[in-house]
Image (tube, rainbow, N blue to C red; front, side, top):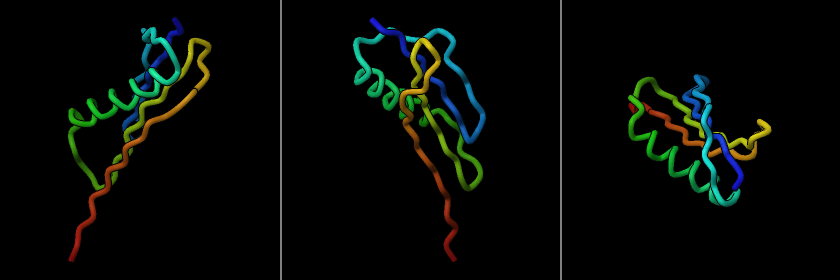
Length: 78
């Protein structure tokens, strides 16, 4: 099975995946990226007015294959 790496980024601060995960397909890797990003979003402390959380998927050669992105924006209304 191919190995995929899931790198998390929070508004520019990156946490690369050094271990990787073996998955059956690229479709499974995309689903894992979305699932992991949603899970991590619940653990991220909120602050500021704009946050962009990204889970990037890369293959064993280091090539970026896909990204799942969640953007938070706080708007103060008068």
